[in-house]
Amino acid sequence: MIRSVVKGVGAYLPERIITNAEMATLVDTSDEWITARTGIAQRHVAADGELTSDLAIAASRAALANSNVHVDDIDLIILATATPDDTFPATATVVQAALGMERGFAFDMQAVCSGFVYAVSTADNFIKAGQAKTVLVIGAETFSRILDWEDRTTAVLFGDGAGALVLQAEESEGTNQDRGILTCHLHSDGRYREKLYVDGGPSRGSVGHLRMEGREVFRHAVVNIAEAIDEALEATGLEAKDIDWFVPHQANKRILDATAKRIGLRPESVVVTVGEHANTSAASVPLALDVALRDGRIKQGDMVLLEAMGGGFTWGSALIRW
Ligand code: ACO
Image 1 (tube, helix red, strand yellow):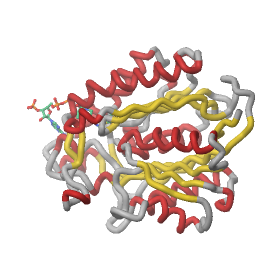
Image 2 (cartoon, protein in one colour):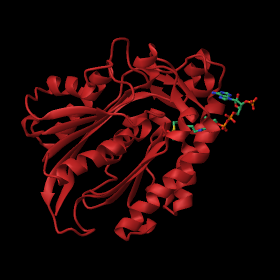
Image 3 (cartoon, protein in one colour):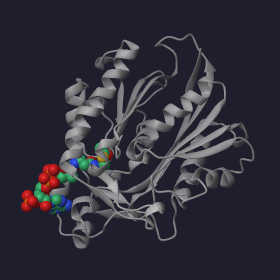
């Protein structure tokens, strides 16, 4: 069978860092509160005029360099974002042009914090269907632009950034020993819109700000994420002990700890970058992957479990042998 094999990863973070101490000068909060409740120590924020596409282009160039894949080989770009440059065209096509890609196709994917897992799953399906051989999957966000900087309950939680992954079709045996994506599981439940949403959009005539019932999101996150992970393990006949690296969406250290405990994952297998990056929505998983690859944790042949949960609600998992 055909598998979607990871060829390379890249990431980009804006230069400007806002520490918790600086955040406390902007809203009524403290380093102690943010650290204790979330594990976040700092976040990167895009410069004036620096757009989601700029972050995505930088991450894509890094991923292409890391994978030794030439831009002419890319058939498809999927860019997961809830903060596109413009209402249209898709930010993915801006990236396409900047990379000098004159063939193939590109589109955006909107599943908020779950966007990257949705995009990985979509890319995998295009590859398995034979419609694309090489896919560039990007998660890129400038959430700083949709935060209400007067709302301390949300402003402290998010950051900007981008990460990208190159996937390529390879013939395989069709077993769990294959390299590549082994299984993906996606969910959404639109009844929970009010728990996490932006109170604006093109059809409403404004950009809007992020609104969230943090406690409710937290409660659902652990249950939903655990469900999506169970599905991945069940589909492959694997157990928690077979997972080498758990690379979750980085929303809150307490959510990561609670999920890992519930599933029975070894604490040392959890890749945690929320302290340095905060919640970068669709960018958080590829940013965390990039860190764990560059510091030598994730190696070829390792079993890597991705998961995410976000507005909608949307949630999902992807299991990949690296
Ligand atoms: N600084 C200081 N105090 C604060 C802040 C802040 N930044 N924000 C809220 N508070 C206060 C509240 O006003 C409240 O005060 P009160 O008791 O006097 O009313 C108190 O702290 C407790 O507030 P809670 O909202 O109950 O705090 P909680 O322990 O639930 O933590 C948090 C809040 C961190 C948002 C948590 O609920 C959470 O992480 N939820 C998940 C949300 C999330 O990660 N969303 C991201 C998108 S979805 C996803 O990615 C999974």
